[in-house]
Image (cartoon, rainbow, N blue to C red; front, side, top):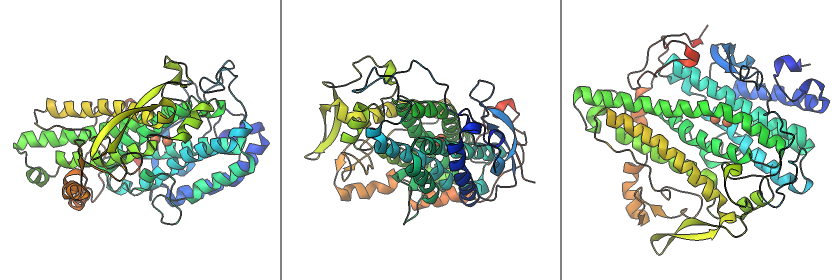
Length: 474
Ligand SMILES: [Fe+2]
Ligand SMILES: [Fe+2]
């Protein structure tokens, strides 16, 4: 029997919710089994300096201390309820926000929750081997923090399934522990979550690009008329910010280190740069191209009747829905989408309702462009001549209007053959992966030390010094 209030910090009155307790009694041991199998490899005895959310109050959502990860207190938190909240968009606009699942939207909502929930354990699985090649104790602690919080995000979605979807919810919750990233027979639901994360450059790119897709999906669900989903997602967003920080600063520190070495030794040629044990900028550009393009696919088809239905029925809003100045119903509005016709990329207006995936993707791209701009400033400030670019959004796409077309990073529609001729310049090739892998053959874990290929961060975690013992290996 689990002592709920102590083991599972929550603000959902778990101590008195028998139905939820019974569901968790089955699921929690299965979750622990999954964590031992698929959580960070060989990490179970480590004491890790982690933050834990123990309440939603400002002083409670980030409590720092040493924790063994299997003893992490995965909690269930929802942003406190606003009694006056309404459905803010779609045909139910103006109704009181729903506290129970509307019968007609039950299966749609369940699918939305399962799809979001599936990404959370998937990324833990993708990253599970990286501890063995960490560039520092600081970075090791950060990946573990991301991992336990993705675990908590799974809990958040499972809470909704258990609490609001009865038996099929419980079955879905079990399936979330059964699928495996990259598994041929039982893969994770979305493509990017079945790609390997083979090295730390890929990890930082993933947390910058793909965790940010998570942010935008959560923002859209945080607008949901189904209030418990909205409130759950709002709280998850507080944690997501750190994941993207890890990604942006991780890539930024790699760029910084590369530029320092290039300047110091007066080298520009990638092979000379590699000879000095840092990652050349063209390789970083190729990783960027890969992670950006596979993440763009996560938003789905440019024109989608599903997206229109989610919106019209009040289940999934737009990015910052309530801040947008329009009718929030979109009956007559239009939105531009691109397609390839006769070997040319053209843009045309379609009903805005059907283009909501594309719109969310565009909102995402805007934020990504800002982050890439900040990476560029690191290069410029170092006095290195190199331009980091975001490829055209049609580049290397497998879903939507660009799928099946061969678009160059510059946005030119090419023949398959012409595109393939350039593939190894545009996407990480086997030599790139092998080189990056060769830099990361072992882990750097002496407090305050960093691998040669990455600069130290500007500051430590929770005001601790850089040479703080973030992980105790025991
Ligand atoms: Fe997450
Ligand atoms: Fe995340």
